[in-house]
Length: 218
Image (cartoon, rainbow, N blue to C red; front, side, top):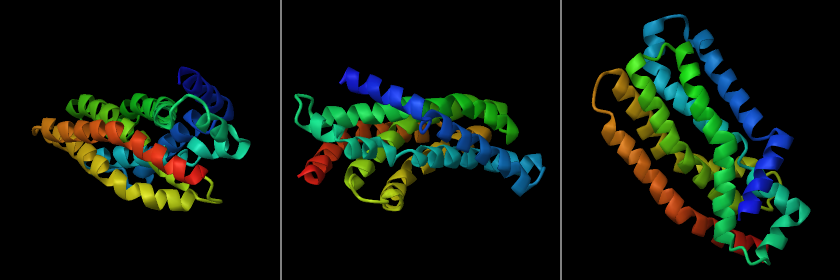
């Protein structure tokens, strides 16, 4: 399993489809918002939590179709399925590799991009905490969606349609956490809900993804 993780990290860095693409999209998306909304700092501060979380969600969505598709095309997925490594472990490592190459850079870049949107100072710790706790759920849900659509030609659109409704609770509570922090209200409750969604996703979805892979590999 550790070998699979190292392999996925190496391929993601070499191919540039994980770290570079998602981070560049997050940067471009956040940079363009002030041009579309206008220079009013008060408006930017009000919409900053939702914009930052939405940008992170869409950036995670970009590389989901690569999680299993490349392994399917070159036959690696068949070899792993017949190896002693359980498919649940494969799905967990895929989700972890996706988070390291996509979610973690977004967490690190979010405070810097928050400056562009005039995010209030007290909200920065909550922004980092909510993204750090919420992006693993996005990777786990995305891995499950990728397992459902593996082997389908041009399944990127179908993958997005399957995954986006499952992303909504994390997006809602993550943005609500940061929004409450900007207003000086209690932000702990939505943060706990984000953590609960992530814990449930990490506990259940590797098994669901493994079941979907078994069906698609028959």
